[in-house]
Length: 312
Image 1 (cartoon, rainbow, N blue to C red):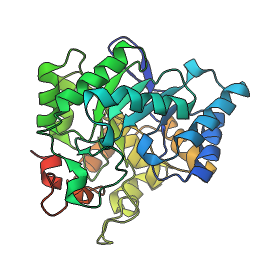
Image 2: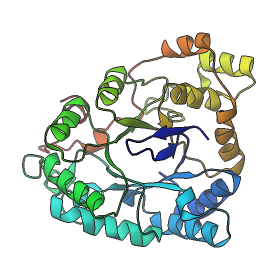
Image 3: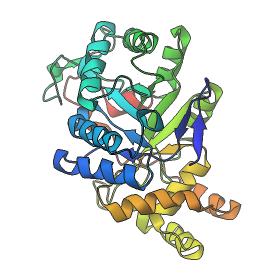
């Protein structure tokens, strides 16, 4: 398995299993199946509402002798309603309890968006807390404390833009080692990638296969002619082409699937290599298009806009 190496020489498998939108009754089988066929990287989040089932699958895989805890790389994320230095470790302890683990390999701030305690998803502007009241640097201190206490081996962020990264880096005692963001051939994020490289920070791509359709029902990544033509020429699936492109840029991918055949197909991407010509053709597909556009954080008179999250 190709890996990304961290500053202390720990290695994270470059391809993992995403668990976003995997229903609790489905995610157990998906995680157990994935581990059986060779996945060693599982990406989780408290907000996905399925960490207990993921934890059951990991525990059963260990009991069955399929893996040891040390064989696995498990990532989770701090939800928006637990921003603030004092809230981080209680939230992480809950995640560890749900996952039945003593530590995480990587813990991320899920979004640069703060919600009031107990809020799963906002319904009105008053459900939010402006970052002026709970700065990202304050929450980062809690993340650093989790690292220092051995509750997680590595720390990072998710959905952070260039200015937010610079804000954290300016005062961090322990620098973020990962930024997890949407990335695929239609959204290549060259400037953000360059900044992360400058800061010696890895990137994990979520939604690396895009989405079946965007909200206007017009953009379908896996039906793009360039991707399909390369797939046909290389005896690959369109999904494998999309995943291979991102991984060959040195970026981890966490495609979500509950289908065992697709789990295997995604994993087998590691057996394929795109040519320089393929990579050039795919580079030209960049449209700056987000399937996860962030507009669900926009409320009238609220403190956040999609533009402020991605660009300000």
